Structures are given as structure tokens and as C-alpha cells.
Length: 139
Length: 229
Image 1 (cartoon, rainbow over the protein chains, first blue to last red):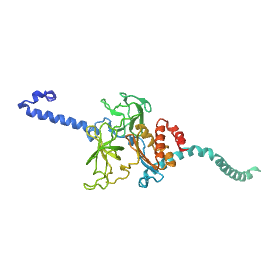
Image 2 (tube, rainbow over the protein chains, first blue to last red; image 1 turned 30 degrees about the vertical axis):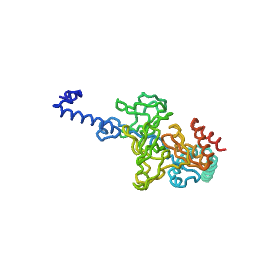
Image 3 (cartoon, rainbow over the protein chains, first blue to last red; image 1 turned 135 degrees about the vertical axis):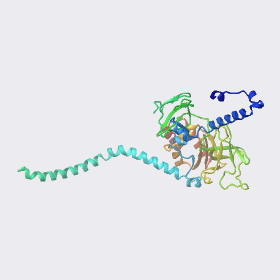
Image 4 (cartoon, rainbow over the protein chains, first blue to last red; image 1 turned 90 degrees about the horizontal axis):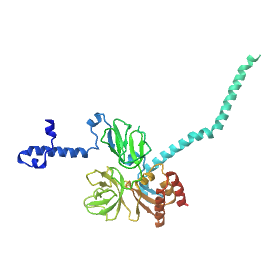
């Protein structure tokens, strides 16, 4: 029965008068196949449950961290510059990331002397206390 | 995690062992789903890139633009009427209804002539249909979209160069913005519209962009310096 359903009939046979119902069915199947191909990008819940990976097509804009391409500089178009908040925020964010990246390494180098002096200060205090405590044990 | 991330891939290569989140992977340009399940087929030559958690795409030197829903593009009007035909560099011209501008009604429509330039958003980009452009967002506000002034100048650059200048870490536009008074519209389709106060500024900017296209990211700063002095 399955095989019979899937068998392909030639157009000449389908054109015959008594094949009207079969012709309708074949055309509907064809339409369905086209529709499926068209919406292949959309993910249905059934596809999600089947276990295979589903692929969603996206543009490069979502792949990379891009800014919008309409920009104005130094007051050429004040209307656009008003709308450029998003651009400035993204720049500030990346600048911050860059700053922290540098400061992590540089902090250790640049402030190592300060750390040492501060450490010494604490050391001497502790030593002084120790000396006080050590005094009775000395004699 | 596939082994060839960051390597050069060719059309026909198959990417396996993909990293999945909730059974979904986002595939960018240059990749197609393979007949074999759970694999990606490479359709363009370039560097295979991956962004956590689940985005894959191919980066290379492309000049042909494939329309993608949501892209912001620069287009040139080829035929006016109630529905304009707009050249966006794709295989088929896009359509842009004159009613899809901010505040446009049937009686009051924007005046667009053949040869005018618009900055528009792709509303739909199906394989079987012509791409459709709009100049308003979902709240019917124009924002940055709309017709661009006739004083400007349009040039074509490669698609990966567009991605490079629009990268947040790129210093090119920032450096140029410190010296020149200008406005720019960079379309994802490789068309760039520039407008400056003086013609010589526009020429310099154009030359700067053309020179930077052939340079590596690190070298761009040096190129900029040459034009800024």
C-alpha cells in the first residue's frame, strides 16, 4: 500500500478523466513539499524534539559585534548624532574592556613598589609588637 | 567543538562536532545545513569563525551580496513609482514602497527620483521572492533610515571590509571622525555613502577607505595617520 502511494504517475496518466482524485492528491503533495522547503528555516517544536541539531540562518550582524553604519561626525548631521547613543555606548564598553585588560598587567608592575612599602609598614608594626612580646622572654 | 575553527575552509568542506545550545545552532553566511544530520556544509571559501555559545560563520573576501533579513543597506533607486525598484547589489532588485517612510500617506509621499540613494532595512529576504525594503522601524519611526542627501558620494567596497569598519574595535572611523566633518552610511551590501562639507574632504575620505581596504587591521592606524597629517 505504501509503495502504491509513493509511486510516481506520469502527467499523461494524471490527465485522464478517471484520475481526477489522484491528480488532486499529487498536486497537494507537491504544494506541501514546496511549502516545507520555503519554511525550512523556521524551527518547529517537533523538529526540536527529534534530537537532531537545528540550524537557524542569521546575518553577519548577529555573528559579529557590529555598530550601525549610519554615523555623523563633528556636527555634520545633528539629527543623526542625536541618535548615535548606541554607538557611543558600545565604544565606551569596548574601551572599558581594553582598559581593564591593560590595567590587570600594569597594576601589578606599576603598583608593586607601593605594595612593597605598604607591606613593609605592616611588617614593622608586627615586628614591633613581636618585640614587645618577646621582651619578657628575653631575660 | 570542530577542529578547524579559525582555519581556511573551502566550498564542499563539512564541519562536524558542532557545539550546540538547546539543540539550536546559528549559522551565518557561507554555511549551509548538510544532507547528513548534525553537520554544516561550507559554501564559500574563507576563514571558519565561531562565537560562543553557538554561532558559526565563514569570513572571507566576498563581493557578491546575499540579502539577509534585518540588514541595513544602502540602495540606489532604479525605477520610481508607488513601489520603487532599488539596486542593493543583490542578484535581484529590491522593492521599496513609498508608503513605508515615516509620516507618508497616499497623498503625501516622499519625492524619490531615479538615481537617489536610500538607507533602508531589509524586511524580508526569501529565496523565491524579491527582497523588500522599508525605511521605518516597527514603531513607524524613521530613526537613522531614509533618503540620503544628493550631495553625497557612493562607492563600493568588499563585504568583509564593511564588517571590519563597523567592528566596535575598529579605529578607522573614529580616527577619521577626529579630523573631518562628515557623515557616512555604510550598507551591509558593500555600498558606502559619504557626505562632507567640502569636496576635497569627501575625496580624502574615499581614498582613505580605499587604502584601508587592502591593509591589515593593525596597519590601518598607520594608514589613517598618513591621511590625518
